[in-house]
Image (tube, rainbow, N blue to C red; front, side, top):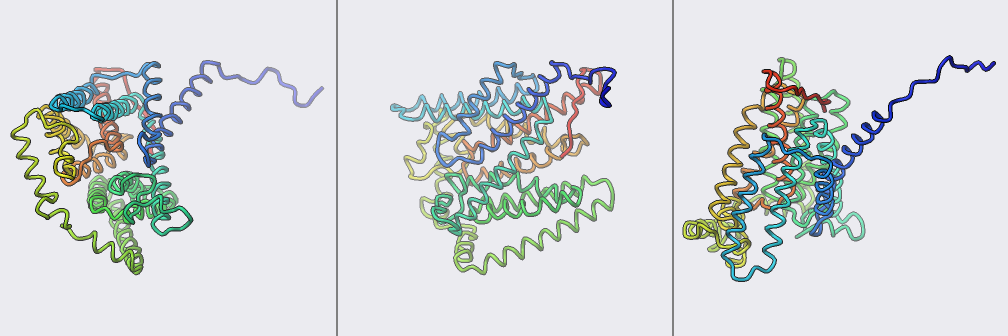
Length: 425
């Protein structure tokens, strides 16, 4: 008789459980890959657009649910795009304008999609963040290597002698890296020592990508969001010991970044471009028809054209785009689009802030997304954030977590039978 004889067969998982686990893994992989692709936009249409069109279609066929908590986001984004159609009606010749509005609508749908899936399954948040960090680390590394011409052909990862990674524009590349940088800094400040130490080199790579983008907006965004993060995490800490750790770690991080910056400025080419870009007002800002003068002209036009002047027409008339999302909304999306966009931003900021300090499993993600979203709203006053894929992703993540909080409160007071659970970062 064999020594390995069994009295009964080993237990076997039911087929339904195996299938459910497989479906769950496929969902996580599909979302992670989609977010990862958002970091590679060197040509348009980018792989991200093509992939997300298919993913949203498949998810919709499988039963994508838009709850009443997400419905306001959908309604306001539709109203915004209807404003674009109204503005488009002012043009005698459309050219590629319908494609522009189609892209606007598509990005709006991606925002609603991410909000819906986060509300349905909060465990997707950690996948989104890890995929975003992976994409940011890769594209930032390409940008840094490209800036220093580290290998033949590396210049394809630069634009105007500035790091652009796998992006068309350094001014979009830099802001894309901000959420991963803030999330990594959050882990450095709050995670276990081993995890925190592992995050340090990734943070330096991502922050280095932002620095070598030489985007003033991205620099300001990183400084603002990191400062707000340290303040928020400090206020949210439970104990004096935790606050002391946060303060000491933040100080050491600041000293380390300052030292790295000083070393980088020893390179003449870096120093020259840094001090040139560090000037608050550039020639193209304060010139007779510079950025600030165009603001005045554009807002004057907006008062005379409540239906807008047509998408993309401002740049064709004055030679440069609006570089202001509020002006962009007025002129390219009409007064209706502007009203919808303003309502959406104010609603999002108010709803997010109201729940920012509530102890929830998703609070770390909420803090990071909310702070970076606030930074992007501020950045929108000096640059046009329309058609920024990651801005719509931020918006969707934020609305998804706002919806999660509403469901949590409904369950707490007995209005629903839903109790979300998720893993911590």
